[in-house]
Image 1 (tube, rainbow, N blue to C red):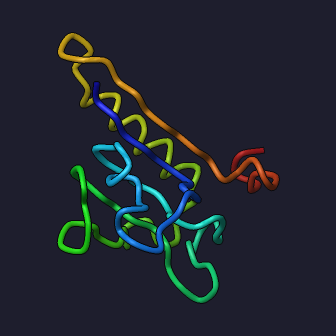
Image 2 (cartoon, rainbow, N blue to C red; image 1 turned 30 degrees about the vertical axis):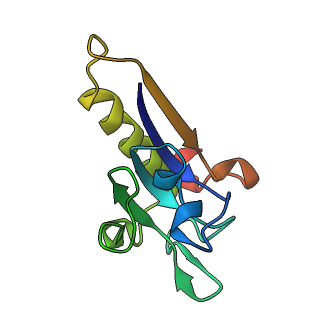
Length: 113
């Protein structure tokens, strides 16, 4: 089974073993913490948006996803999920995609009204 996670993780990141690719996911694109700004992706003064490609993606693999800076998280999470789906071959193996939006907590910006 192909296993990928996109969006809000909020299940631990105090050590690499607590991050998504150490807990069964092959890739993760999103933020480790529990909340952040929808555009700047900053929480408590720190930018929290990651791109982890590969199982057990730790200090020499995990990268900060600066390309999402200033972009609305729901749009970025949707695009990342679509990318995972489009790259997946359903004839090869099943797909499990965990997609967790943060936008359920507040109303969408005007561009989505």
